[in-house]
Length: 143
Ligand code: TR5
Image (tube, rainbow, N blue to C red; front, side, top):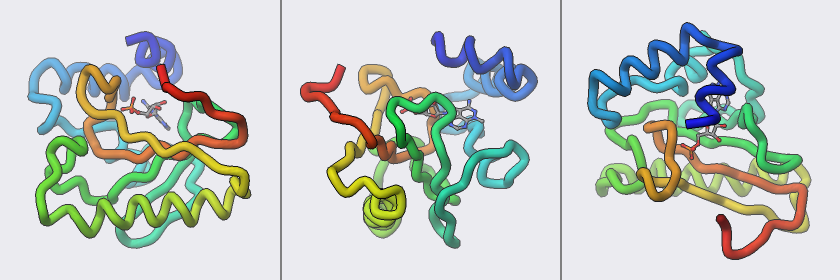
């Protein structure tokens, strides 16, 4: 995965262990880089935080604004395809928080929300996350 290769030059120990984990455990059980972002062990640019949700800038932005919103507790929610009824509240919170952050970022002309899932959805981190992308004209259909 080319994004992993690019990032590995910057934070090789982290990516190495993440890669290792991906090889030795099912993606659904392996810890992810987002655990270290939540714990602040790895720095990120946080734009919103409460007791349940963290929002921070994507390290490889796909637009002038590109923010990831994640639940602080994964609780089995490695991806949207793993959602259970108990996740309904956090799923709603992620979307509602995306709206708040879009407002905070001044995305008054619109924005794009994306949740990648699984290999065909190009999901690379197995801790559910909502992409909030904006600040430019988006295209449809997406790639
Ligand atoms: O590909 P999916 O949908 O799974 O989205 C994962 C996103 O996480 C990508 O857009 C990556 O650019 C982003 N990402 C990956 C890392 C990272 C990050 N965003 C902020 N900070 C990051 N760190 C420190 N390390 C990453 N490996």
